[in-house]
Structure formats: structure tokens, C-alpha cells
Image 1 (cartoon, one colour):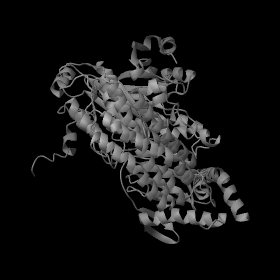
Image 2: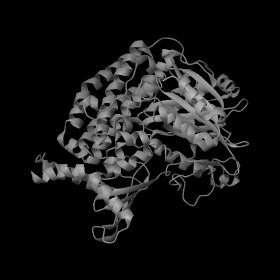
Image 3: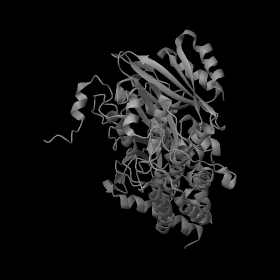
Image 4: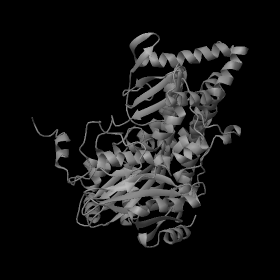
Amino acid sequence: MKPEPIAERLKDRLGKEMGEKEIQKLTTGVAGGSKYVIWCEIEPSALREAVQALAEIDFPHLTVISPAAQEEEIELIYHFGLGYGEAGGEVMINFRLGLDKKEPRISSIADLIPGALTTEREMTEFMGVEFEGIPDDSHLFLPDDMSVHPWRQDEEEVEDYVNKLDEQP
Amino acid sequence: MKEKRDVEMSANNRRDTAESAASAKNSGEEGEKSTYSVPVGPLHPALKEPIQFQFELEGERIVDVELRAGYAHRGIEFMGTRGDRNLLQVLYLSERICGICSTSHPVAFTLAVENATGMETPPRAQYIRTIVAELERIHSHILWAGVAAHELGFDTLLHKSWRIREKVMDILETLTGNRVNYAMFTMGGVRRDIEESDFPKVREALDYYKEVFDELVDNFLHDPTMELRTRKVGVLTKEEALKLCAVGPTARASGVKKDVRQDFPYLAYGEIGVEAITPDKFRGQITGDAFDKVVVRLLEVRQSVEIIEKCLDRMPSGPIQSVEKPAVLLSQLQKAEGEGIGRHEAPRGEVLHYIRLEEGQESPVAWKVRAPTYANLMPWKPMFIGDEVADIPLIAASIDPCMCCMDRATLKNWKGQDEATLKKEELLKLSRDKTERLRKEMGGGG
């Protein structure tokens, strides 16, 4: 699968809601062939439209949602893969979106891609992001009574949970 | 004869019965059968990992399952991004994410950093990385096959397959110095070379595996009890595998031809050419059950042997690292800026590492690890529904989960007792008793 048609389709569907886009070309190791990664910045409100645009080509494979940065706003990156099955034919598409730090909220895509539930639940408990329409937002990895978000760098209570083994009691 | 037919027919009716039972429970009608819930976990009877299941049972059939993970959560990403570790220290941390797949995380991590910084890796290093990754695949699949046999009650097959596995562990020790946690990888290359004098030992081990492969296939795939016990157990359809984003042998056993070595080539796989293995290569049909998962993993062992042979034949000469001194490497990485992803096909499926580096900072700004079992957590649910309590150890082990160690099950309303705690031995005994029962029904006996 070539990356340009995918990028064009996203541009057509999202228009102004898509910001910077870059097609990164990587080598396929020793063979010297090429494989492609599309990085693009989109508005949070355009996420569902973007996923539907990908689904028209092939059923997208959501790998994970990464929390990328937390300075002015919480930046999430959605890692999608499209086009499995042919040798060297998969294109990775990474959507970068910024959420408000005080109230990070975005619509859930668990109805479009049921496998997205695990990573959305992880983002809820670790970063405090609220996914609208998520079928189940109970804790998956952390205890039920833990209300601190460990990956938020501005939360000071997280330090209480860190086990400092090198300090003598 | 009638009993045997009933066993076969009930396998087909499992799903329908379970669905109607689940809907009866949800509709809350009076006089319908009600379900009772059985927590299993967090220490687990299959494949030594802590995870908590909550099973809803109707009689012996599972109608619903919920799971809670996180018992082996050690906060590795938290440790890596706190700002007090440089990239080599984060690499050492990534090696210790998992013991069985101790190559997978360093490979994905070094690929991510190399993609973020544009660092080159010499060809010889790519081949050495491929060889170590494929050796790890062989040892991991044979280990899993032995454990699956153990869950079903074939302890002799467990000991036989683990004895067969010793050869690849010896080779790994010869090449890397350790049986587990090889510390072979670094950004821009590998840390130790494979001497020409070691090649004959590796080839001898590969010949041994080629000889012994037919025996393994005979014991696992042509044994009638094994087939009866694993056929139609833990079925994952192709559509479910796609929708739930399953990865690795779990997805391939359902007919989804996803393999990172084929789709998004890296290291030496692009040159050698890898094709995703699906169960129709063995018998021409795909069911997506536990038997198909055994098929896929055993055929991948043979594929790995062939890949390592090709690597040895084509190994180029040259340096093994693009930057030799760690201090120089670290200062180069400190000046680097960028973000990258690294993907690798671990024995359990796709591993992804995402990393973001900023100029002037020694430690990464953001690091995300996505292990393959994470993606296979959701496919577990449709695999359990419709099957029996005695199949729990087998289905839990069939996705080859990588978390960590042992368990006991607490059941309510089990056999007339208000509350009973079943130890690991008892849950395992249920699984083995079912095997014995099926063998007797088959009329085999021995």
C-alpha cells in the first residue's frame, strides 16, 4: 500500500481539521527497500472522521495510544497500521492530537474499533483522559481505589507511591 | 458410540447455548437459569502469570468473563521517563520487561531510537540481531508447547519438549553468554560478534531441530487425544480477531495474516522474505481454535530454523556497531531530537515502542511500550465464552500470555458447598481428568 493515497484521502475528509502532515520514509533493514510512516496532526473533534476514512480502505489496526507530551496540553498519539497481508505493504499512520490539560476529553472509538477499549481504559486510569461514550471505564491495571494518575507529571501525590529502596528507613 | 457423538455435537452447540444463556441472564426473567460467578486469580494456574478472571458460569459452561490485569505492573515506563536515566540505562530497563521475550523489547527499543535519530546500523549487526531474535522465537515456542502439554496432563511430552529446547538454550549461551537476558543489543548495532568458529555449532543445532521437528509434529499434531482435547476449544473467529486487534500467533491461527516481519520489514527480514504462517498450511482448514494455535507455533519453529540458516549463509563482514564507545554514543544521543516508533514481531505478536527525544536531554521525554499480550487481552473473552471450566487452563495458555506466576481459584456454590477454595492442583486436575475422560470415550485407553 502506498502512503500518498491514504494521506490524500485524509486531507480530503478532514480539510482544515488536519494540521501538519509528514510522510517519513524508513528503510526495510538490510534490503534497502522502503516502508512509510505517516505523522499527522489533527483536531480531537476530527478523530472519528479520520478513523472512518481509514476504515474505507481497510480495517485499521490500532496498536496503542501513547501519551507524548504534557507541557501546555496533553498530547496523545494514536498509532494505526493499515494494509497487512502483503510483503512490505503496511503503512503506519500516527495521529497526533492535543487535549486541554485541565479537562482532557475526547470521543471514544471503541464502537468503531472494539479492540481500542484496552488502550482507552489505560489512558483513563493513567492520564485521567475522559473518553466520551466509552462502554467500560473501570480500572484495568491499577487498583480500584487509586485516584492518582501516575503518568501525569504535574501530580505530586504520585511520589508517595514510589518505592525508594535505596533510602534507608 | 452415542456418547462420542454427543461430545462432538455439544462442541458445535456450545456457542448457541452460551449465547442464549447469557441473554436469559440479561433479560432477568423469572424462572430462567441464573449464573454464578467464579473468580479465578490473581495467581494463575496456566503459564505462571498473575491475572484475575471473573467467570460467570452456568453449570460447567462459561457464559461471560471479565478480567483485571496489573498485578505485575512495575511502572517501567514511569521509571524510564522520570529524567534520571540516560538512553543506555533505559535500554537495560527495557531488557528486563520480560524474561522469555528478552530480545523483543530491546530490538523494538533500539529500532525506535534509530528511527528517531536516523542512526545507521551496519549490515552485519542486522544479521546478528535477526539470528538472536529467531533463536529466541524457537525457544519460546517450544517452551509454550511443553506447558500446553502439561496443562492437558501429558507430562512426558512436557519433559521431552523441554529437553529438545535445551539445544537452543546452549547455542544462545555460546553466542551471547547467557540463557536469558542476552544484553546483545545497543543503539546502532550489537555488542558482541558471532565468531566464524561458532558457526558449525549453530549449524549442528539447526540440523538437530530439522531432524526432531517431525517427531514434535507427530506428538503434538497427530496424536488423537491431543486433537480431541484442543479442537474447537477456545475458538476465535477471523472477524473477532480483526475487530479486537489481535496480534501474533493468536491472530494468525484465526486466519489473519498479520506478521510484522512480512508487513513492515526490518533487520534482515526484508532481504530473506518471511511469509505469515496460517494453519491451512498444515491441513488446509482454519478454525481458530487451540489446535490451530499449536499448529502455527510449531510451523513457526521450522520457519525460524530456515531463517537462521539463510542468515548464516549470507552473513556479511564488517563492523558490528556504528558508534563503538558508549560515552560517544550517549553524547550523540543527547544532541538528538525526534520521535520514532519501533515494531518487532515477538514470539507472542507485535511489540511497539514509541520514543520521543529532545535536544539537550539525556533521558527520553516520552516512552511507550506496547507488549503483544496487551493486544490479546480482549480476544481472550470470546475464546472463553461457550467452553467449560476444565478448559480454562488450556484457553488461558493458548494465547501464550506473558505476565507472571501461579494461582488458586475461589468458587461459590461449587458442588453444593457455599464457598470452596480450589487450589491450583485441583483446577489442573479438572483439566487432566477431562483428558482422561475423553480418551476413555474414544476407546483408546493408553
